[in-house]
Length: 473
Image (cartoon, rainbow, N blue to C red; front, side, top):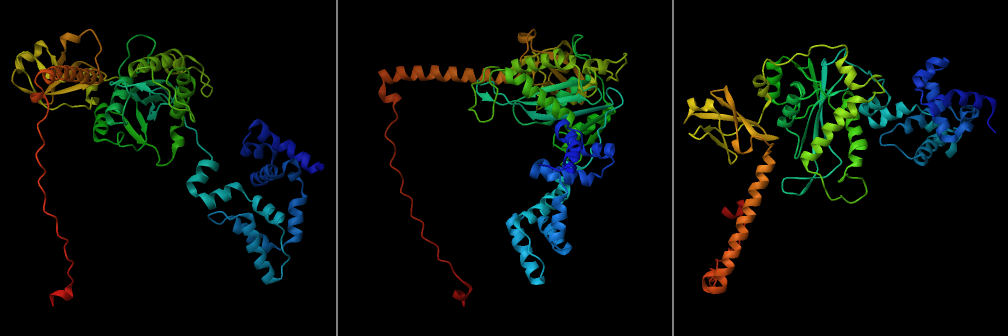
């Protein structure tokens, strides 16, 4: 039965084990050293309440010399970690050479496991592991909305249908406001993250959204990102300069600074995607996708505005919507949408303005303002999520927006165009095969290939003899 000391120590330690109170807080409240509490915690994990008695350390101290205890502790910190049996064998070999009392396996185990866990982590796993596990974290929050935005990507746990009706796993780029935890903009896409997808998500975040249910907009003071190539692109740096915001990069290999956006991704994966067809679960075969990328995009947008923004965030004690809106304020916005369109990174090859408009991606775009530029070279910029409208530049100056009159009232993506092209090619190949079959039935000599020409016998390569320097002498 545990002695009174063990029970007293357990009453203190249980606040950490059962209630989750940090050991640093517990040490300050009880006036006990943090190192002592860590030793109690390690002893409890090893032997339960019985491990909190004072007998273990006293017995070890009486039955072993300080030099031998220090040797065991040093062996327990060796990298890579040694098994307890190996530590005991090496320590007892030294003890026999010096005439010290030998240690039992249990005593060696008690000495090794009573070491500070942080010390063992630092010695055996390095500074990064120690820092991420034991160092105090400074949880910073911006002082107001739009002071700091964070941007990051994640691959979602769901399969959707791509433009060719094949299963594909989409990515999500998100822009989150540090102060309110509100989602200012996002971009759902297939393929690897790129500077284009980042720019489109940021463009959506900055410009006011249609309707009143998603008020988040404006230019941030600081954009906080990692060191991905899309975030370190020259164009994004130039855009930040033009729109007067700063880009700050997180410390390499330090994910804690992006924990807020990671928690949002966890919410999407666990609360939204688990309810949708095509959700991926570990250990199970991939399901058949049902949703298209556009349908999933609409679902995520609805989840953000109607669910995530409207429920109380446990850390900030308010809903993201209310925290961002506050008592009412005016965000900093670009002068025009055309200025913001510097973020459109997809630039087509130069096009020529024809009398019937600009031909691009198999479509024809027209605008009355193009009349002055017939037969002139121009540059086309576009949003791949909706190519019913393009923006045309001449000598680096914005001219106009041109529309495809055949799809002006609908949304047409670049993926739709690619899918339509593939479907048309398949249709034509089917028609070709039907007609060739008719020819084969009536004129087989025309449809069937003639006798193959006899293969020309190639001369065999003679093996090359390797010569050495002595052969030339």
